[in-house]
Amino acid sequence: MGPLAGFRMVEFVGIGPTPMASMLFADLGASVMRIDRLTPSGLGVDMPSRFAVLERSRPSVAIDMKHPEGVALALELIGKADALIEGFRPGTMERLGLGPDVALKRNPRLVYGRMTGWGQTGPLSQAAGHDLNYLALTGALAAIGRKGSKPTPPLNLAADFGGGALYLAFGVACAMLEAQRSGRGQVVDAAMTEGAASLMTMFYGLFAAGLQRLERGTNLLDTGSAIYDTYECADGRFISVAAIELKFRKVLFERLGLPYTTDDGPDVSATLEKLFKTRSRDEWCTVLEGTDACFAPVLTMDEAPHHPHNVARGTFVEVDGVMQPGPAPRFSRTPSAVPTPPQAAGEGTRSALAAWGIPSERIGTLLAAGVVGEPAAQNVPAE
View 1 (spheres, helix red, strand yellow):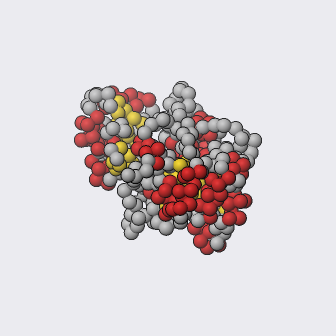
View 2 (cartoon, rainbow, N blue to C red):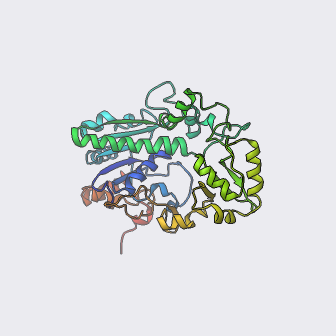
View 3 (tube, rainbow, N blue to C red):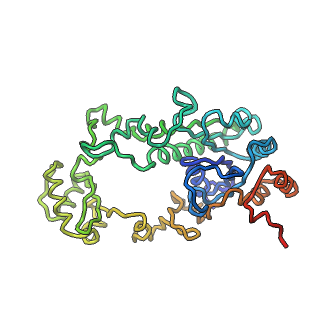
């Protein structure tokens, strides 16, 4: 199911943006094979595999990439794929013997997706880093935070997932579309720094026009405006208002029983702060939710899946007892399937290799030689 049904992809295990991008492809129907290490990699957080939801909806095949036969097997799988996704430091795949030149020679139609923080080239390309560092280099991090405060990390949403995973997925999808016309693959060099910078396009335009100040917390969208902010309620919970346009501002002030004003300054903020603390968050929902006041309660992760709108839309799904966001976006004719649970490293070695045309006898030989692996419980002979 899904609009990408029939496409095959190989994903080399990574953290952050690469599994996120691969999850998006798998959610939308692509057959994605996740190539894991034989032994724990130490990547990410140590937790049971069912909670690693970025790895959902695709099989895990454990391959020893230090073994020549493991590299040969990986190259064989690449030869059957429409796309490859990897997120290693530049040069790593080349040292494994699986760089773009080798892969594209084997499969000229292959789209070779590469995810890094700084890009494949440039003076920082070989330096280690994380989402926060990449975001810092774009001007975005300096712009996020309240007036007088230091820059505020926006989780790892803006560089890892927004500028990284989404731009990688978009680039790979575009290249696959082009390959269907030209019959030729290519390399997609996706850098989190450049993706995050791209997300800042509107703000760079505003800055050039003199409409965006460098000081944090002094602009319309960075808490510099009283009507684009969060407010604490009587019960210690929070609500959000974003009545930017004048017609929505009028609705907000009318429903709050306040005299209308176009002032966005500290006096209005103080008035709203005092007013919102007179009622609980749920009470304010009865007054403002569903109106054109541009309002929403600030929900926690344990609350969000149970909000009536999210329930009606099926925004969240429960898979193997784990609540998580469902596939997005929606498709009218080719809907996505319900996600399947993440697999432990190597859990899908036999079945996935067989599905990709590797004979069962050869799979058995590779298992016996330690070229591929699977969880210990699967190695117990059936009685």
